[in-house]
Image (cartoon, rainbow, N blue to C red):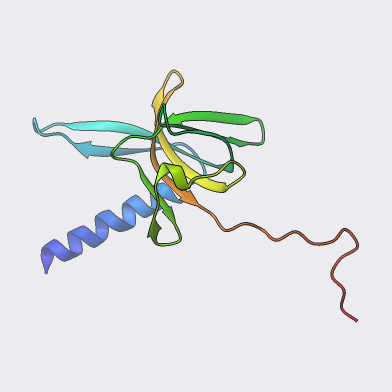
Length: 127
């Protein structure tokens, strides 16, 4: 029971980091006994480029554009369903959790968000 409470606490703490809009940091235990600080950032925007040959994805939002490498540890989901990099399309709305420094970004997770339906400029027809 104690292990389950600890696991739930870690999950809640990780969720708090993931839902933050600002840069966050988490401490990850290392095999040697110390801890490593990992700076994580979130970017919600549109995919502007996907390159399966180089395993990279480019996400842009407002004035920020991030090119991140997708590796074997990157998780990609749409709703609760796992996806692959080949399923990510240019124009998709995504929320990308990534880490790194000096423009060497690695995507930790990519969540494909539902598309927003467009409405006519004059509004909906309610007659």
